[in-house]
Length: 95
Image (cartoon, rainbow, N blue to C red):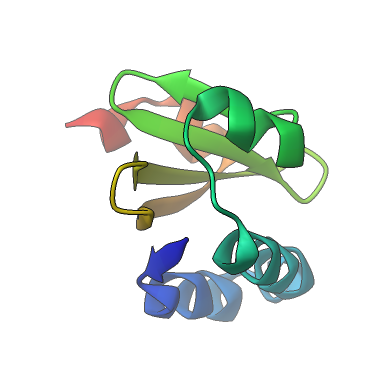
């Protein structure tokens, strides 16, 4: 998968330094993946969920959420948000 953009991961790691190893691992795994569907994604990340047009990944022991839009046809994943559990629960990220 082509991850667009790693910059959002780095920005999130600056805000939450404890999250950096988990985001780095997610990036390394994801860039090697060739997912065709959400079920393929779940084979790699069992906790991945489809929420409307986004795929939500639980990270760092379910303390954070990585929200991405995946284009399976072109093998691109667009990172939209990296949120704390509380920020995600507020659902303001959907608008």
